[in-house]
Image 1 (tube, rainbow, N blue to C red):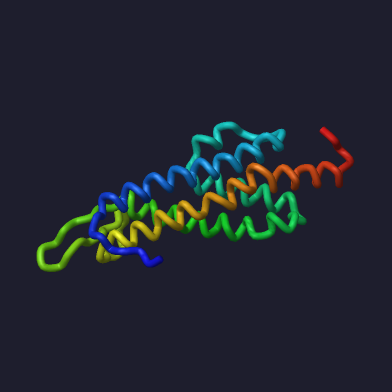
Image 2 (image 1 turned 180 degrees about the vertical axis):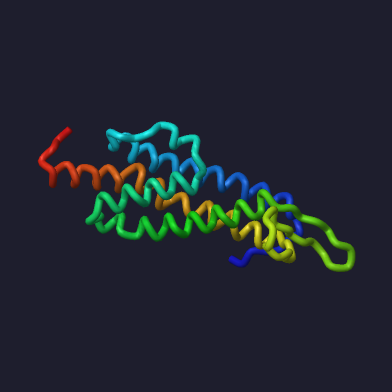
Length: 160
């Protein structure tokens, strides 16, 4: 089903904020699993930026290689999630203006990022992408990562 530009930018902005928060929670769920299995973990990581959390998870995944088949795609998914959250940042920390005779414009909160037309469909699309990105992380935190750590313990002969 195609998304419809209903012109409700505020509603779309709300969906982006809400689904990004759910995605951040899913990232924290994965982080929980890694920190529980890392004797040198630093609980302060919970208060860090999402990009730092994702980088930590990426580093941990590299340390667990070879990954089980069900986790092989997770590094690429995390990279895509980083990009989605970057787009969220541009929208949430930017501004939307109604320009008479031109329409709605989105201006990023960063210098050098061009103004672009603002549409509700753009916001709804990003919200949908943020929402869809939760599933693989939740699956990983509830199932796949635990199986991976079990495999690592079996390989090392440790059953702790």
